Length: 130
Image (cartoon, rainbow, N blue to C red; front, top):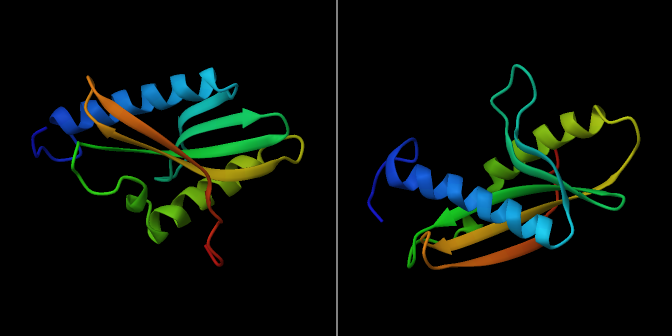
């Protein structure tokens, strides 16, 4: 893997592929994928995947790293958690019924030919005062 900026090149392609891998994994595990790369109008907030299992909306952040790279799940820092929580709040307010919800992280490490996937369910709570 090269050291391209996140906005382009090989890293960006790996990130997009990782989201596809995560989506396929969730569907295989029985989740219904409601949205991908969801963003409220007039906002820079985004949630990679919004999925559902009976009665629960799951907000999923997908993190992809090359083999031997930094901890993918650890990249979901407090700032990122706040941004996802704000987007989730807007999404939930737009629904016609209340749902339980949780925040998951899917960490994919490796490359398109050989990777590992780790699904961290209920990875964090929304930060207070987000």
